[in-house]
Amino acid sequence: MNIDGATALGFTPPMARGIFCLSRALGILSHAWEQTGRKRQQGADAKRFGQNPSQSASSRNGPTRTTVADVIDGEKHGRLEFAHVRMDDGAATLDSPISPSNSDRVQGGSMLKSIDPLLNADVLYALRSMGHGDDLVLCDTNFPADSVARQTVLGRLLRIDNVSAGRAARAILSVLPLDSFVDKPASRMEIVGQPGEIPEVQREVQAAIDAAEGRSFPMGSVERFAFYELAKKSYCVIQTGERRFYGCFIFKKGVIPPDA
Image (cartoon, rainbow, N blue to C red):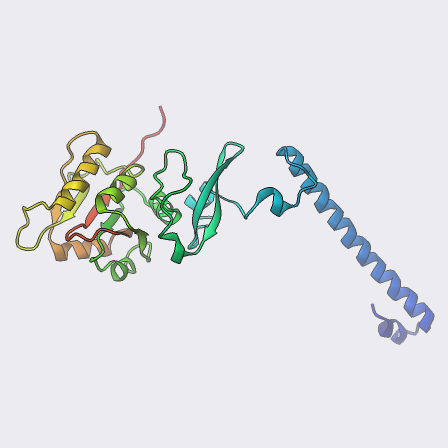
């Protein structure tokens, strides 16, 4: 209640001012109590994690922290990439978000344990989100990647720039199981007019597949325009820095058995 309202109710000016001061004092006390509770909770959290309660949140924790689980499970899966990873209390933490325009240049630096550093946050999220039988397209720089990617389940293009198709395949297959329920879970784009010829870029990817599977695991082949149609129905498209022709492949995701 303000002074005008109290006066309108018939209170004398001194009484109105007193009512106004009393109402304001209650609000200030409530705010002070709320802030005290927050500081008490911050101090308790700091002690629980072995930190100095006198440090500010920004100086203690650095940039806003996003866990690997947040990225992979999609709780914070916007167009963010991360330049650094650190380990706190046994958990991997991704720091220093950078813009998508700069993310393509970040291929080295710190990395997650057992995770290939080429697998950025966007790619990891897609690989984690795919289910059994979903297809992933790995393509070269000449493939109409953006237009095709807009028609996929994910609906946007992913990138692993500045590396060959073979190197990108090795990174992806280090975490992605191939489907054992179909005869050809990995396929290559056929050379127009020479469907049986296998160029060097495809031999390199075949070697990455064999290494991941621990045995000879020949790819199937798909005619060029049939490949485009299959790509549009895939879960996602990942474009590499591969400049050699016919560096285009489809991987079908398999399953991971439960722990024994």
